[in-house]
Length: 84
Length: 205
Image (tube, rainbow over all chains, first blue to last red; front, side):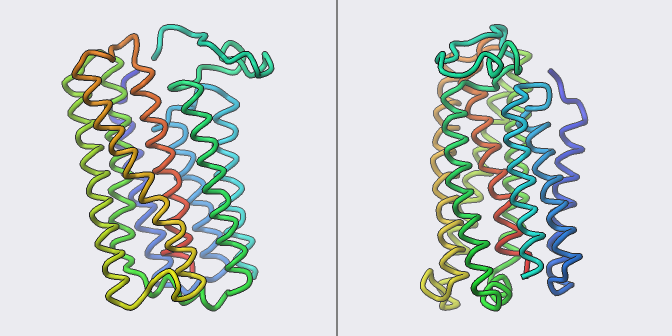
């Protein structure tokens, strides 16, 4: 299985999202909207690594489900914690 | 991709969980038992974070502002890059290009070592600022999570060295590389944990 450009594209996306999250955290005091945005992007980053770096997309569906579930549960808690 | 579709499945799981029905297991079953155990361990850390944040919201608002954010961002980029290098190493062993596979493993290892150096520097910087695990609840959780993650990166880096040694001895090929793949999925799991740790400790206020 070859990854000609795809992996580079995903790496760039992950780095851009990381920098964007940091910018949001630094420039805006933790509003609920910022927390929701960060939680969504964390889920997205997790899904990219699980599917394309870990290569669970197209592999064992139970393992993929468990890994993706993890990246739904904990980012959801970020959103919940925004309402503390 | 491994050529043998069905491996020994320990015989303790329902048939619907088998590789035949659910799909191929990257690496091997023991590494996934390890990964799921580690996910549980980190899950407890994350639960501890959210419980502590509930009881001490002000401490957790101030905490991230005391940390060296640039070092946290740099380490995130370093770990993401290491995952990329590991995925590239996997893609090259599948076409039996062992030279490029080894090159990317060295790059992944370099990222692991760089992460450890940066993290050590960050711990030292914290000490210079007067922060320790006893400073407040935020720093207790911070050291609890990051030092544990630090140890994981440390021993996984040693595992990369072992895999490079095995690769040089001819243990892996395009048809048999389950050991290398087991390391790769473990390394990605460590990266995934940092993807969660970073916003919790450095970004969210």
